[in-house]
Image (cartoon, rainbow, N blue to C red; front, side, top):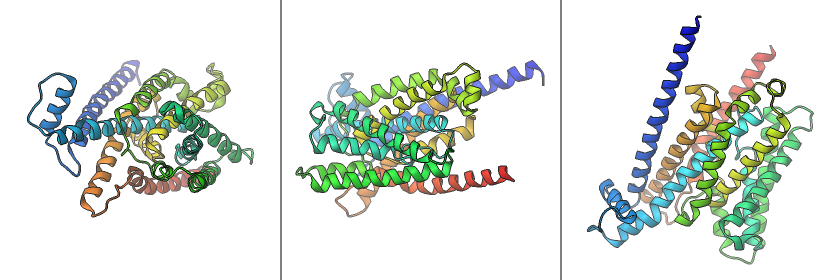
Length: 362
């Protein structure tokens, strides 16, 4: 194949990436608008636009009620924006983890990282440690819990001197159960009665408590860490090829892996602090994106962020829709929806991974 042909193919791939990036950005924008509009009380899209424009200061007040204004501005818009941030963040974490451990089954939920972060957050609230610092303190506690959980998982998986997908998943499930038991114990022994509701929200994953105050730290964390990871995309690409190849290309593998993992643990802790443990987004989304654009992290990372955001916005719409159609005073947590969708995908992916390994060993 000539250099001209290679250049044409590269230009076509780049054009396709730009189209996908713009298209997904548009879909995310429309999804966010519809996410604010839909719910137990449906609000017309033009009213949503008008309320937002009024609150920003672009137009004078309209003839909508104070209740509609509060629903749009104080309840649904922060919730949808939090879904955008958390969904994108978890997808970015999934992409990065799968590159760090070279395992297609890696995910902050499956590997017990989200559960570890939940333990840290619950400890901070249950015993008042760092809780006085608000979201920042709880996020830091969740970050510490996420780091400890992953170190334990990685150590257990490496006991056989060789990490396999099965050993990593089993270690993650085991640590996840321990963390879940720990959060339950803290809840039952705590004198704070409101802790039970918060722990339930963290365990199942919920965006119902979203507020404008909750958006600043997660959004800033997502922007900074994602930008850094995109700048390090070539190093992540090299890491997938193996540690030896990455070293030949001039990457200090141990230092790079530790540094990136700390960033991944921090962003996981921040997301868990505001939304709880929402599973399988970091598992499903990267595979969906790679199927379309390949494994180049310069493309996979930004597209996964957009797809993860879209996915969680609509998962939350489904959760709210269930609440509005079933005679039940308790809202369905969004983590239940993602687990129902992600569980079968995880089983299929695990079967596919084992089948591939058997074929390679023939």
